[in-house]
Image (cartoon, rainbow, N blue to C red; front, side):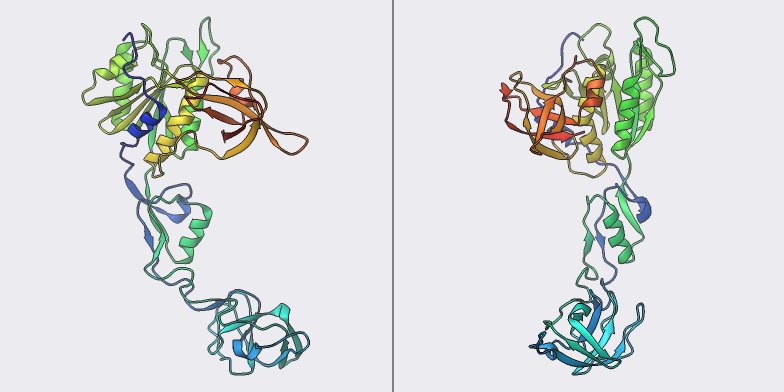
Length: 411
């Protein structure tokens, strides 16, 4: 293989990645669903709440009985009972009466509003004064006002957070259908790669890629398995890839994707039946020599051997792909919160390549966020550790000017 098969733009690559089918679904307990994506919408089996409830501590009343009430002319009401939490009220509210009620208590019959305790004075054991009027249904959560029986609680594709778990529990849903976690094989290739426990010999390096990529896979909610390091041997590489494709949903390799005599990945993949090379080369920097392929519906990603390039390509393309396979929308660019800041120094960029610049964020004396490029040779892994995020420079841009407002994706 003496040249790239096809160099594509990042947008074109994402369009092609969007063609993968998502993982199959499985049913899990809501307690095991955090971070997962719903495969089916969830309909409420009951009203929430199942009976009108008070949203404050106060008194259940008829709203008309408080009309015109003020500090100078409070409304006088008879205290005829109280509501106990967890029990249906055994008393009704009549005209001119009030019933003590706690937050969450069931509204007694006859009441149509709740006056907050802060706007009342207890005169004696059987009378209160109300100094502020309430409107109809004030401080009341009506039956089904939160969720109606039969209505969607959560839609398909929704990521489950703790608050979604609480909502599901509130309507009595104990299990949900979610997309299965992707099983990902991580394979490092190259004669020079050794396990991290080894002392590298001359010309050898420890397997940083295998561990960092596996960590990224796990951070995406997928299941990562590091397979044995594969030397630059076509037979061994073919066996490793074919075995991984039988057991895993995604195969991620590092090394062997650039142009060179020892780069065997494309040669091995091209001999697989039904293989589809989606991209061999992406118009980005760093990370141009990356490969993406599809085999019988499964994704194959070959990251550059360069550790910094491998991590950036993994963050920009692999992480969104894994999230997509597990039910999320396919995001553009690296995953992470985006923040705005002012660029601290001017930067040059190359027309035609989308660049991902490592940056750190610094608050200046005025409290403004400054964006500082992380300087260092491209092969220095420490530049990734020192970076707070990535600044994406569009391919049609020749450079960015100091003081310009830019957007940074936190990593």
